[in-house]
Amino acid sequence: MRKIVKGIYEWSKLILLAVIVAFWIKNNVVASALVPTGSMEQTVMTGSRIVINRLAYICDVPERGDIVSFYYPDDGETLYLKRIMGLPGEVIEGIDGRVYIDGRMISDFTQNRFYEDFGPYRIPEGCYFMMGDNRSNSWDSRYWTNKFVEMDNIIGKAEFEYYPEIKILK
Image: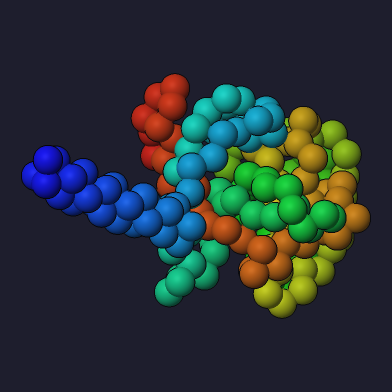
């Protein structure tokens, strides 16, 4: 009987340790997210599951083109997934379906065009301008009351999709 109790005790310690480690990793290293809308289609489809690297910006800064998870600036609670289009200190605007940074047209990362001009907006230091890849069907910085996402509200960089297919996100 003692052997059984000791075995249960040892297994319980191991399971508890595994739960604590898994919880710590989930909250500090990686996050898993379900994509609920089509705002990032054709890059990430509705219903896809992705992995967010929470440590991506510990030593690096976000770059234009990174797909990131962040807290929606108008409520500070809802998680969003968008692409960084504008960096701190830049002026961004959209004219005739093209994105301009400081007056120069940039590569748009997608073939999807948008139909409403926006800006110009000067992006404050420590903030980013976000756009979904499905430009004509994305609730993003162009339409928000608070146009910019502060660095502190970025959870991490979307690294790869693992369902329904496995692919690196770029």
